[in-house]
Structures are given as structure tokens and as C-alpha cells.
Amino acid sequence: VKSNPNFAFLNLCVLKTKKACLSHFSSSFGSGRNKHMQVRGIMFDMDNTILQSRIDFTAMKQDVFDFLVDRKLLEPNISLDDHTTSTLLETGKKRGLTPTSHDELMERILGHESKGMDKADLEEGASDLLRSLHNRYTLAIVTNNGQAAAKKALERTGVSNYFNLVAGREQMEALKPSPSGLFYVLKQFPEIEGWIFVGDSWIDGKAANQANVPFIAYQPKKEDLKKHGIETVGEIECLAELTRFLGFSVQ
Image (cartoon, rainbow, N blue to C red):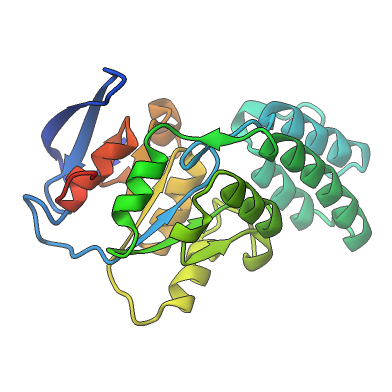
């Protein structure tokens, strides 16, 4: 995993659950010990960052793969371990996925999302974190899910009012790891400088890196970050540690 530059310090926080969270932050960022960057806006991924997703991503990816292979837009022997649903979809589009087939495929994806979103819960500490961040920062969600389904899930879990904007795939030119969703958010708030992006997946990190937005990885798969050359300014294992980066404590 690349960092900007070497990690300067380690923080150990203990949640009410007694779970220990080891976090790493770069010395070049943050408003606590380091004031080289003034954070004014925070973008979050949604699934497995703010919400404990119940979407069966393995089944969804397999469904997309089978659909594209049946239409001879993908080779049947490619490694699914090297892809996400979004990268498979973008590959299919580049290889001639027709508008009709695209709409059919998106309906299948929406079915997986809707089923999973109905059962989604908040990530541990998400509500307390968002309550502390609310009114201090401009907050946005950037998700590959459909915007309507995302808003519904955030409303059902009681955190929708904390966000100034929810950007779903309809607001993107291409799904993450494309940076287009982040660019959309930046365009909506031209007066705000100093954004960070928090997400759990390498595709979040790739999107942030390409948009030149500092990336904080939440409970990441370190091997994926390394494999895809993702640059981070920090890694956190519990959401409460984000406030240490920002220079205050969750209230």
C-alpha cells in the first residue's frame, strides 16, 4: 500500500464494544497534529462503509458475468477475482453492450441491490460519527448503487439527513473505479476546497486517486490496495478514528 508519505503515527482507540482499532495516518494530512490540509468536505462510499451491506456481491457479479458471456462480450475463462461488478459492466459497455441489453442488465443489478438494501444496517459507529460531522463538514455519499435505492436505505437507517448530497450511478459517467462520481460532487460544491474520500474498497481508492482527492481506507483488504497501487493518506479500522484524523472526538 502506498502512503503519502510514510505513516507518522499510530493511534489505538477502544470502542464501547472493547474492540481495538489500529489506525494509520500520514504526517502530511489532517487538522489535528498536522495542519497541512484543511478538510471542509467528506465523501463516503456507502456499502460496507456507512452501511453494513447485505447485497450478495458475489451473486451479483456472477449474474453480470454470465449475462455478458452469453452475449459474447466477455471471455468465459477470465478471472472473476480480478473484477468487480462495476469493472465487468464497464468492460461490457466498451465491447458493444447495446442500450437494450444494458437496461436489462441494470434491472438485474437493481434486483440484487434492492434485496440487499432492505436488510442493510448501519456500520458500527456510523450514526455517532455522522452526528459529530454534521454541521462541521459538507458530507456526500458516492455509491455505484442507484440513487433512489441508496437514499431509501439511508432514510430507513436514520442517517439520510446528515448528507448534503447522495450521488448514485445515475450521476456518474462511469462507475467507480472511474472518478466521475467524485467529480460530480466537486462540481456541485465549487466553493468548497479540501475534500477527503472514505471507502473500504480498492475501487474507491482508485477513484479518489484519479480525482486527486485524499483517500482514507476503512477496513480495507490490504492486498487489494497493494495490487491496484492505491495511494492512501490513512487507514482506519473503526469509524470513530476518522475524527482523530480531523482533530476532534466523537461526541
